[in-house]
Image 1 (cartoon, rainbow over the protein chains, first blue to last red):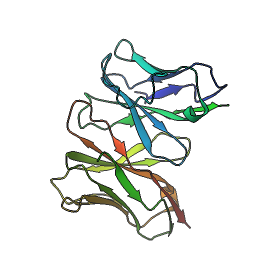
Image 2 (tube, chains in turn cyan, purple):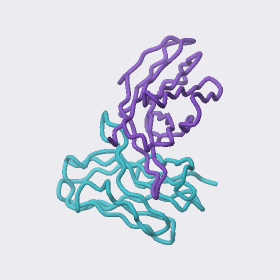
Image 3 (cartoon, helix red, strand yellow):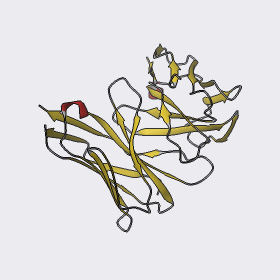
Image 4 (tube, chains in turn red, yellow):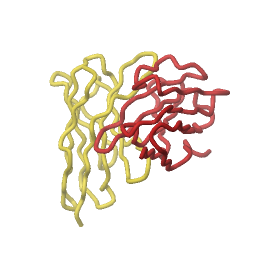
Length: 114
Length: 113
């Protein structure tokens, strides 16, 4: 019944530290997307999951970024050795099948790298 | 070719007026064009979407106009209300394995009472 949830809602970290961002999609949604929204920018695609597989990782900006999904449900986006340019709102979305179905977005995690 | 260009960046409209936001794309493989509405601190929410086989779609006060030959589409908000004040994003995707959305840069709409 609940929508997409993300945690934490806010994360402040120091440059060089690793962070993990969590996404709980809508139950039954097999497709899961991560997007990044930088200040004054549109949303930028990062990675797509269908079930536990990630057939499209083309948007991950560097090898410091990785993501996994387990049980066809929860997904974790990990950023290693954070940099100031990683500061952004990270949004997760889920949808049925991944086809032309509406993508439902979570509220996002605001990441600030000092 | 993957870009979606959106204008204006910001828009101020009087209550009851018409808000118009425009988007343009290059990739003719795009076949799904949604508009998302985002309030501060919230994730984007689907407002209305169109496919290129129709030129217009209307849902309540919101209308998408689509010009396939010009590769442009626009959102019209009729009788704009202060509650419509939000950021609006156009997007596009193409039929394929991922259906990832390519977003425009957003339009901040302020409807003055």
